[in-house]
Image 1: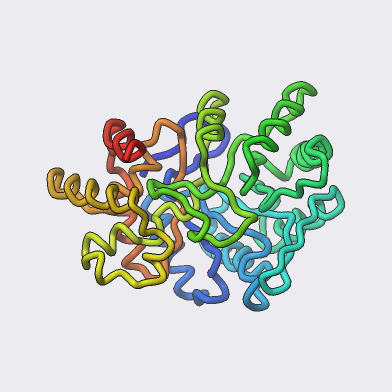
Image 2 (image 1 turned 180 degrees about the vertical axis):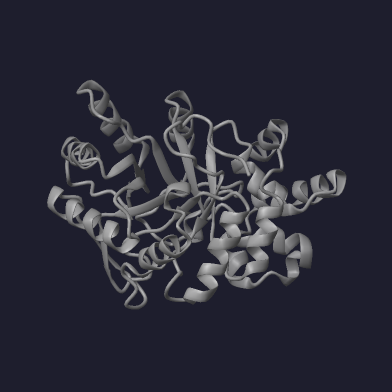
Length: 320
C-alpha cells in the first residue's frame, strides 16, 4: 500500500475505502468483512459522510455507525484515518446545505458519537453554500479544529475560485487552510452526465495546479470510473451496460480505452492497475476512493495498490 507523503500527522493510504452504502445497502456483516480486508491490506483511509444514503432511505448516520462499531470491535481506531463530511441534509434527492457554525458544530458532535471516537482525522464540507461568505466558513472550520476534535479540514465539491478565496483568507489571518479537496477525479474525461448533479465538481486545471503548488492532496471519488475501463477490457465494449456507456463513452475516453488495452498487454498488468495508478502515482499526491459491492472487487483493487504507473503514461492519458 502507498501512503500520502506530504502529510505527517495522519497516515493516509492512497487507496481509500468508500463506505456510503455500509449499514444500509451493504449489510453490517459484509461491511465488516470489507473493512477487515482493507485494513489487513494496509488500508487506513475510510471515507464516509453524515448524510450518506439519507437520500434514498433512512440512512442518515448509518455508515458512520457501522464504521464506529467495527473500529470498536477491532480496537483499531488509532491505526485508521477517518474522513467524514458535513453540512448537508437530504429529503429524497433534494439537498439542503447549511454551513453555519451552529449546524457544523452539531453535526461534528453527532459524527463523533456515531463513530465512537473523540476526533475526526479529515473533516470535509460536503458541498459549498455559495451565498455564505468564505470568511465565515473558514472561521467556523478553524473553531472546530481548535477544539481539538478535527485534525485536517477540507472541502468536497468546491469550485477553485471559492477554495482559493477561502485559503487566502486563512493564510492571511494565520488560520488553518483547507489541506485537501474531494472531487470527481479520474483518468476519464468528465462530462455532466457522469454524475447528473450540479452540486458536484471535477478536477480542473486550475484546481490541479493550485493543489500541487500548495502541497495539498486530492481525494478522488469515482476514481474507478464506475468500472467502465475494466469491464470494457474484460468483456468488450459492446457488453458494457448502456447506462454506464451513456455516462462514460466519449471520443476521448474511447481513445483512453485503446491506450489502456495496449498498455496492459505490453506490461502484463490489469486495467485496474492503470485506473488506480492514475491517482496513486500522480504527480499530485492523491488517494483513490473506491466503493465496492463485493469482496472480489476490493481484492482486485488491493492486488494492484502498489503498482507504479509511469508519469509518461499519465501524461499520455491526459493528452488523449
